[in-house]
Length: 174
Image (tube, rainbow, N blue to C red; front, top):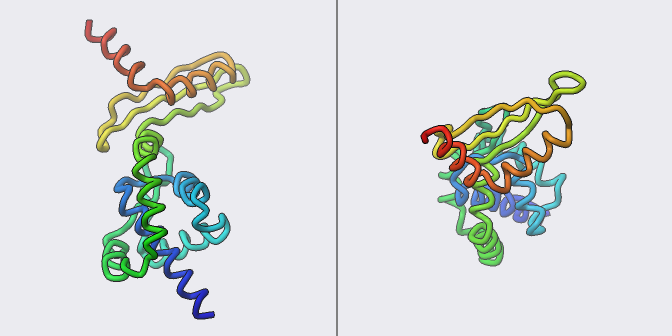
């Protein structure tokens, strides 16, 4: 039982550590992806820990653009600073390596968004958005005729947002 308690505490500290290192609010899906890709915690336990960290006010939800994102609170940072030395070196190294290799992708996923909704049976509204340091660079809504067009626009935006943004800006300013 004592080992279970230690593992629980270490896993929660690891979550706080990752949120603290990322430094930007991220979705539950993104933290789940990070944790599962590294086999740190299983899915159901992870969701329980996140819920417990929120109710303890170590993590909080921030709302923006119809997306709930999680971030570490000041209370969570304080707990991490007091007990972070209880994290195993292996887990810290694994988390640091993953974040170093993937931080740009993580930030891009948070700052570049694309989604679509059905307007009528035959119309789809595509929303393409880029945000940098909480400043909206572009927020574009386009109506298209098919689900395939909507999906294609979202995929192109995710893969080439910088280039597309530059072209739009160039067309509008020239």
